[in-house]
Length: 238
View (tube, rainbow, N blue to C red):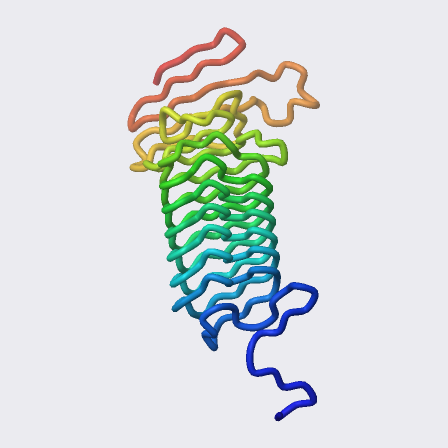
C-alpha cells in the first residue's frame, strides 16, 4: 500500500459505491448507490448521487450530480446534469446541460440544449440547440429547436426568441422580428437600418414641468420630407 488506506477497486460504504463504477475505467468517478453500475467502456464520466448514470454503458464525458441525474443515459456523451432527475431519460443525446430539479427531464436524443431552473425545458425530447432560463417552463413541443426562452419563477415566458430570430415580449409566438404584446415606451428615435427614415415620439417642449402648455408629438422623417402629428390638433408635412 502507498497510503494508510490503499484499496484496489471500488469501496462500498453503507451500500454506496465509491470508486470508478463498473468497467473499472480509470477516468471515471462514481459516488453513490448504483452509480455507473452498468458502465462498460464509457470514460471520463462523473456520477455523484443515487442512481446517477446508472444505465450508462459507453457514454463518455458526462457529469451527473444528484439522484437519478442522467439515469437512462446509455450512449449519450458530454452531457451535464445537476439536480434531482435532471436529464433523466436522456439516452443518446449529446452536449446537453440541465441544471435544476427535472431540468430537461424528457430529452431523449436531443442535442446541445441548455436549461436552467426547476422543471425547465419539459416537453422537449428530440429538439436541439435551445436555451431556456426560468422555472416551470413546461409543455414545449417535442422537437422544439433553436429557441431562446426566458421565464420567471412561475413559468411565465417573458421573452421568446424563435428559430428564425424573431423576438416576442409578452407573446410566445412572435409574428415579426420584434413582437410586443403591450405598450412600448421610448425616449429616442426608431430608425430603419439604412437610415432613410426615422420615427420619434416626444414631448415638446422638453421642460414640460414648468411649461403647462406642453404637447406630445409623433414625427416621421424621410429624406426631404417630414410628417408631424401632435395632440394639439397640429399636423404638418414639409
